[in-house]
Length: 163
Image (cartoon, rainbow, N blue to C red; front, side, top):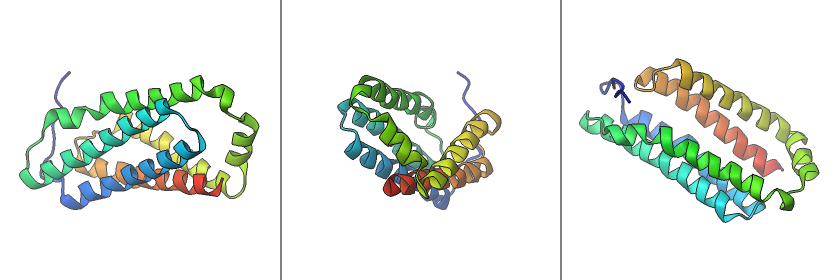
């Protein structure tokens, strides 16, 4: 896999700290879902995703302070984030007998939670588009990604609190 070019001059401490916002909301959401759905597999997947996000924040801090990119820290998210989400999805599949589909759907569609979940889904769709179209080594693209990701993760967490 070819190493992407990193524009280290545009990465700043404020950008790295902004990247912590979606990681924080993801962690809070994982705790909330973990309370609703007791599964060691889910918790493991969420922990992998959370640690991957924290490593990416640390990578940005290193780039901002030292102007050096630690390439494995940059690339790890492409491996560990999908693996963590697959574990979380597997947990839902394995534990599907314990889930009340009607109650989950009712919670997702309840007002005003449905607005927050809808905004979260829109944000995640945009994140997929960004992953395909934008250069994640570009600081300007990172600001856009983090603004959308932070808003989407915050909306998802608020939706969970309203269920």
